[in-house]
Image (tube, rainbow, N blue to C red; front, side, top):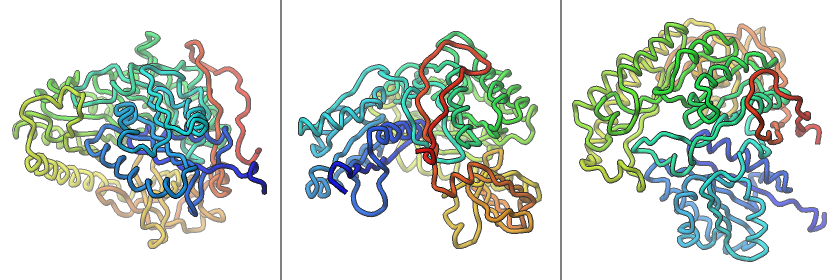
Length: 497
């Protein structure tokens, strides 16, 4: 093999939310289109890309510490390139190459499509290239994507955020909300289903405010219903909605559209109305609980999860007790709990009465203990129920030693199951569909140790077994409209290359 035939290898390290994970798929798609191939486990890659998050206080330390560990590798191999993108890059800009001058490229959240050109420019000029735009250059959906999973995919419906939560730095880094047109969203979903994907998760910073840009406040409910007409799509999820924008038509769409899963992730943040006002969260605890009551009235089996911040500036013990009261009443299936993290550039960072770490830690531990008790009780109540699982890959850390596999129920719960019994058709693979009976409930997962009731082999399972993942072309912006999307060129799968 000659030097010109050797293809450069890449590795992407992703930090943060699902939006970042999906952006990394777009980065991978561009790099592979430019001739790169994924790096294996042996040796150092030719390119390392960091897709960063700026939400947590230790995000900076984590990135710069990791970059420091790479300095000897860069010294030993000057041709290796290092790129930093994402929210922290948007925030720190040129500071990154000042603190880590061995970084080759810095790009922001608005120009992920620039990465291949910036890498080539840095290589040609033999100097770092920093490009941070203030507004969106190319809508991410127009870029190719190399999907991480053969059976489940992210589909972005919007980018950016119009809210002004005082603790959140995301709007200043992601910009104002920009909505994709319904037809192109459905076209992307159809392209994924054509590649064997069974489940999609619709993504947006405030996913249920979708439609604000083109003036249709009922657009998200319509979009959920429209996915019901896509043949072969078995599961639809979405994250994360904002309680202030949550409407009854979305609940009706969830309940009436067969492939929309009865799962809802609804960020609470605090149960104290006073703290919610300080956070600029435009709802109150009663409104939040009323939404949950309406959801459960329409879908009694719905699993509801949430986000909660402990220790917001000025939070009193009375405020914290209000949060515990809402948690007790809400009966969340699970909760992502966070200790308040001061982020420079947010209004909350300069608020008085920043709480001592000791106080925040003690409250955090009480909240986690309560939620674990609730999650455990809710999971124990499911024992004996038959569930349908989409078999997952890499979600059970102890699966090898327990001889189990893992899958996600339609309500999003994680289930470790035994892939045995007369119903098994050859072997169970990630991407296959199985039915089994729950035998044990733990706080963060369930177990099904009996024989499978059913096993359906799928094309997604075939692709997973063959090591194939979908590669989809970008979908350009179009005019608003629901219904059948326009005809799209057949996506190119890896097996057709």
